Image 1: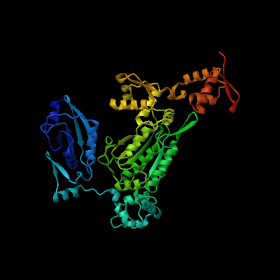
Image 2: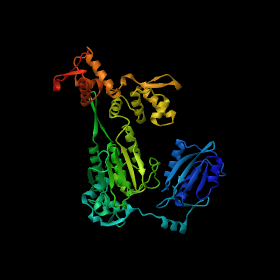
Image 3: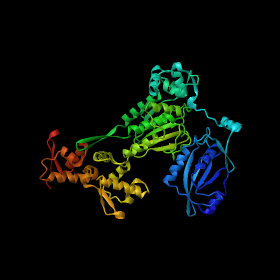
Image 4: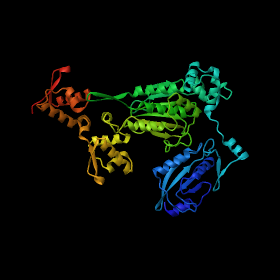
Length: 528
């Protein structure tokens, strides 16, 4: 955008536009005012008179914006963009009007936007605004179900989780699980204290559907009912069993690799039941198991101010009482940690990142089962980690080095999908200092290759044709006493089935001869 086009688009500050040089104390005030009125944009790097001073969207600035907005009580949804105007760069923070409730500054002020001013509300005007915009959370709605109808065993379990010893009715009220008089359960209370909440609250359960390859119809359906913590635990167990694991043999060690880490499934399910809209009582939390991914679908959109773009930084809970209890049971992570745990755990296992999608009426978390990193490479990384600690991003660099890549700073930036050459240089040097990589050259001309002693088994590095040639060469060697399945496994790192498949192909092509049967089977090279 040219400076002239920018001046036409944003000629002055008004009810929807604010200019700021940086993220100072007044930044929070403007975000609150926009949230409580009709939304607006904050132009960072533009002076009050409209002159463009410029402000780049650095990682530090982005973190500061998120931090300032996290300090606000119930801000509207927001997005952060960088815009090039002429030869300079500015940052635009776009803030949406809250659809429900109202926003407050960290010291409790309620502000609205009037013209170019962010105005605080007081007295009767404040009371009227709050009455108009006030929000009673649906989870604290009175169900009319008497506390006396609560399941006694579940009440004891809840009391133990919180450390209550007496006055259960009063404690339930304090935590929003019962009405203020302690006589009837709220929606949140019913979700934990009824034997089957779905009998009174609609589809308050988790359903799991399994889809075969390339079909829109599922071939298996399971329902998980009961209190929420049990729904999550039982559904995670069932999905993990359906996915199974991959067995990789490296020499004398066997590695069972989860297709999706259990901690990721648990956090995805916990988030789904904790943040879903229970007002949408005709829809259950759904888990779909497909050949290449697991989808966890939760009724209702993301709670404000969370968006798909800021989901790792912004924090909000649609059902505060519900998630507090899940945390007491140890099912959900602490505030702001759940998404990080999911993303970081997938990366630690060299799996693809979760994908989040907000369709407005539901939120879908897609957990990919496939990965560009093979199960054999994942197992090899675990074997290497026995020699020393490897950081998450470093694992991917080691895999590429094991594939024969000569790593440069530029190549490593491409692999790690980052433009930060300093971060990449530190990663390469970490791996060098740990003895995993060898450095060749200095400074700008430095390259890094895998240390010779760490070369993965041939079965992970060579093609099928190359493996067959390796086996034939070994069979013809005078130092090889006999060629067996066990020797091929030791030579290649393949499992019994993989080794047998290679040997069978060599026998069928007439290059090896099979001698003996069962455990006594040996292989001899065919002359010529």
